[in-house]
Image (cartoon, rainbow, N blue to C red; front, side, top):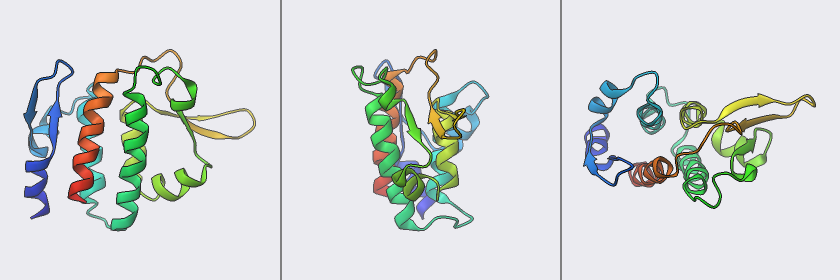
Length: 153
């Protein structure tokens, strides 16, 4: 079943390079308010399984590809502090077409540090606050999880 294949595919990587397989059941148990990595994994699980069928298979694939690009850029120490890679304009055509059709994707973005911001001119962004550091090692681990998720979906 899809659920059992998820248990075999998703890998949790610790920033100190230790790797272990972890089931979503175990991952859910680790979800605590301050644990962004576990919460991101939970929202990725929701995106993949999407029990309410709010997104088509093609939308999920496109969404995960976009998330993968965002997270890959944030995992690059040369890019993670550049404002260009720390925000997405919600009105952007790709964001509208690929991210917004999958409700769990917005939760995932928030779990990895993005916040919804409305500027004075009314433009809305998903943005990592300037005063918030990006943990590149965790982004690299998240990127691997997203690549694994693409194989599943």
